[in-house]
Image (cartoon, rainbow, N blue to C red; front, side, top):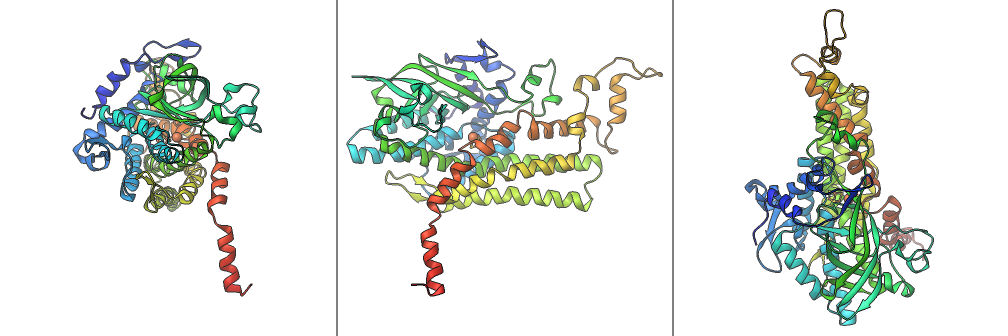
Length: 491
Ligand code: SF4
Ligand code: FE
C-alpha cells in the first residue's frame, strides 16, 4: 500500500472506534473536536511532508524489510546516517508545527523492540522477533501511526510492581490463555495516543523475578475492546473552544496531546506479544526506548526552538528594538542554546552502532547528555523570549476586545478602536500582527504549547534524574581515574 496523504490519515482515524473521554463525558466526534484537532493536524504533517518532493529524502526511505518506500517514522534505522536523518526530520517537523507531532514515540518503540526481541529470542528460543517483524511490516505497508506506551502510573515509587497495593499500577498479565494473554493497567501522559492507529506497550522499569507478570510488551489496536483514553487537559486549552478564537489561541493550527490510556482486561493474541515474563529484558527495552527518545529531543525541541527564536525576533522588530545590542545578544544566546541541543542530537546519532538484530542504536551516554540539556535550555530560551517580548504577551486584551463595536469613547470610539490605538506597533506593522506574535509567545512560554516545549522537555523521555543515572552508569569514572593515575605516576 502507498503512503497515506494527510487527509487519508485524518479519515482513517474516523474509521476507528476509539473511546475518548474529556470533561467527564465520552467524545463521539473527537476527530473534529476543537481541543483535539490541532494535535491531529500535527501528526497529519508527518504524512503531508512525506508527500512533498522537497522533503522526500528526509521523510521517506526504503524499508529494510520489504524494499518498499516507507515514511521514516516507521523505519528501522540502518546506519548512522539514518539516525542523523531522523533528528533532521524531527527538527523540520518542529519548525513546521511548533508542537509535539507525536509520531516519534512509535518510531522509537519500533527500534527498541526490534533489537530487544532479537536478543530475547536468542536466549529463550521464543518467537517475539518474528512477531515483531510481522507487526512492523504491517505498520510500514499501511503507513500507520503507533503510540509507544511506556509510562505506568507507578503508585508507590519505593515499591516494585509486584509489591504495589494495587497491581494495576503497572500494566500486567491477569490471564494466560492458549491463544494469548489478558492485560490490565494503564499508561499515563501518553503522547498522541488518541491519534494513533495502534499502540506498542512496553515496561517502564527494570524488573525482578517476582515482577514476571508485569514484564510484558505487546501491540494492540487503539480501539481494542476494553481500552479507552481520558484526555489530559492543558493550560489555557479552553481558549480553543471560544467562538471565533484564533489569535488568542496562539497556535490555532497545531498542538500536542497526552492522555491516560486504560487497559481493562484487554485480550492480546499471541502474534502481538513481544515480551511475556522474561523479566530481565524489561530493563533493556526501557533503556533502548529511552535512549532513542532522548536523541529525538535533540531534533524536535530544536525545531520548536527555531520558531520561538523567530517569534522573539519578530516581537523585537514590531516593538522597534531589533537593533538594540542587548536584544541582538539575547537572540545570539537563544540560538547558541538551541544549536547546542542540535549538536547533542547529531552527536549521539553519528556515534551510533549496529545492534545484534541489525538496526542502529544511538550512543547512550551522548543521548542522555542531550536530554539532560533539554531539561534546561528550553527554559532559558523561553526566559529570554519573555524578556525580549515584554509583558504585553500576558496582559493584552482579548481578540474579542480588538474586534468589539461597543462604543466607549466620547467621540464614538469603540473598544476595538481604543485597543488598536494603544497597542499599535511601530509604523508599518499592523496591530494584529503584533497581537499574533505576542499570543504565540504566550502560548509557547506558558500556554498549551508550553506542555510540549517546557514540561515535556523536563519530564518527557524520562525526568532529569533518569538521565543522571544513565550518565553515572556510562560515564566510566574508573577509566578516568586510571587516566589520571597513569599521568600522575600513581601505582
Ligand atoms: Fe516526537 Fe518530540 Fe513529541 Fe517526543 S516530544 S513525540 S520526540 S515531537
Ligand atoms: Fe515526548
